[in-house]
Image (cartoon, rainbow, N blue to C red):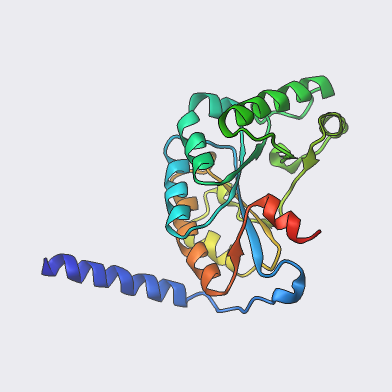
Length: 224
């Protein structure tokens, strides 16, 4: 029992020391979003990583937005269903992450196939589409316009997909994030658990600075 207690205290001290390495910044709530930011995740769902990220978000009562790939949702419906149950927003990221070189009709089919999965699981029709790799093409613009989607990008890129260490991801996000930001992470393509471990640092630090995490739809509603 004493050994467990010593281990718990040591872990707590390590966490406090880690948090203290990041400077405290005060949110300026008069910038238009009231200190709100949106966490977004691309490329999932993943059978393990998505669930672990969801558990972390639940621990801090944080909601996020997941831009899913239809092919992954077909293989791994359980984490997607869990995300919906926990109140997270689900949006469209294409069926297979392939948009370059495709015609508008091919892209409409890819987007619609993913939308049907989202509707079946959540009962909600997606409104937003994040272009894979952030790359727009005339054919994609045509497809999105025909389907009534709005293309969504990001303002802070964690670059977690590069395999950066968790502390480096956290450092770069925390020194960049501001009121109204849309922060890009991935819950599938990144190696290891770097994204999860970075979030374990980022989420409590931003909460301590006074930030509020909201879904993308909620964030955009603040700007209207």
